[in-house]
Amino acid sequence: MASRNLRRSLLLTCLLVGAGLAPGAVAQNFTMRLEYAVTYTPFHPNGQVDTTPPYQLCRNNQIGLVFRYVWRNAWQEYIYTEPGGDLFPWYYMQGVTPNPVFVPAASGGGAVNKIVSVGLIAGSVNTGGIRQVPVRGRTSGFFGNPVQYATASVLVETQIEPPSTAYREIENGALDMPTRPWFSWLSSVQVQDWRMDIGACSNLLADTPEECTATSFPVMPLDDVCNPDLSDYCWIGTENFHRPVTALAADTPFQYHVLGRNNCGVADELGSDPPRPFFRTAQACFVVANGTIPDGGTVNFDATTLANIGALVPNLRVTVHTDHRDVSDLRISLTKTAPDAAGPLLLMDRPSGSNCADGDRVQAAFADGGAPLTACNNYEPAINGRVQPVQALSSFAGVLGAGNWRLSVQDTEFDGRSGSLLEWCLSSDVPIMADPNSTNPMIMANGYE
Image (tube, rainbow, N blue to C red; front, side, top):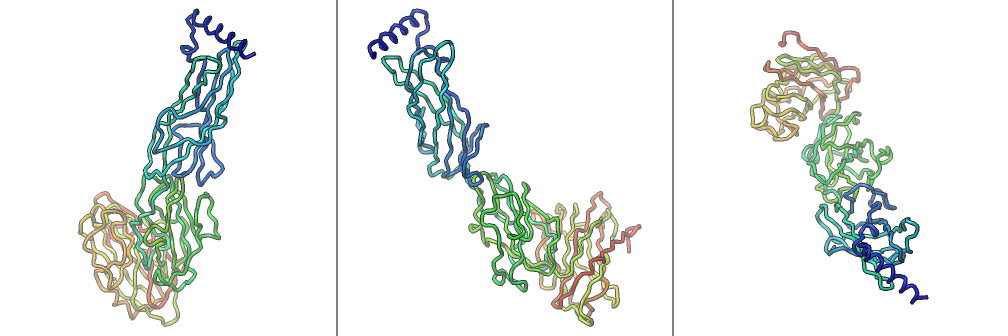
């Protein structure tokens, strides 16, 4: 039987050569192509079909490649699947199934199709990038047939998990923050989207990071659903900044983290310093729905606070959160209007430090003992943290905590640059609360009080 097959194969080979169709020259009679890749990631631990190159290979995770052989020769063969070049140190093949694959002779003008699965696994790769992975099929030369080759070049993109987040706004331990603060952090090319979680500290009296007992956050927030049992507020998006849509609770300590995510994992929050920044919101906060600051004009924002009868406000602090195209145009002051009166007291007066003319945002707590305002940040917010007011807030120490207050914001230059007040807050060593129906901005028609 074997001798008859050998003679038949040799006879066929001679006929093909005589017709100018030698097996080695008929490349279309033996082809291979990549059908799809199967990628394994923390998001898809059981594998996900990927049909679009480059195919993603996560560091230290596996990727599977599924090839199709098309055989149109009139003889049978064994095909070995093997690297088409040196894959090391980036990749090495593992678990080719089946290897070799047997293909019977094609007959009647049809083709024989065979599927082969190839496993690739990454080595110790610390950098990402796109590389070509050459794979070939090689016939065994069964019964004296000529050895044939089919090749495929696969684009594989090695990706590593995102680095730890570098925060550039709310510093760890920030006090008297607005209830809808603006967060920002450094971007990263390795991040596809971000997830932020904010959770109240178990110790509601915490004023320092050390006093904030652990908040329950998801360890690996891979899902796109916010679980209220894990954090009080969460957000998922592609920007490297965020302002909560829903106001956080006032006079409350919080921890938060922002974790970059991609298909290969989530940033390691333990690598950041600190792992979960701490802040505490101000006591009486007023979120302003329509707080337009007119170009070259003044707007007054009236609000009412509640406090124990007869309680005064020692160590008063004023939190201001504005969005304006030129913070160097702004003059901000505070007045107590009723039932007792004090002020106006000047908090900020047209800061002229470097970058102030180009800054867009103020998110600061004005407090005696704060840092003098000598310059603006070269990133947003232009003014942040604890800032020393122009006039000392200690003059309000004998004023009642309860009553009517007025924050006045003046745009001193008619230069086509306007803005808005987003939120303002009052805090004191004797706690005060906000009347939820108290904010009433009044724009001065002529631009002056």
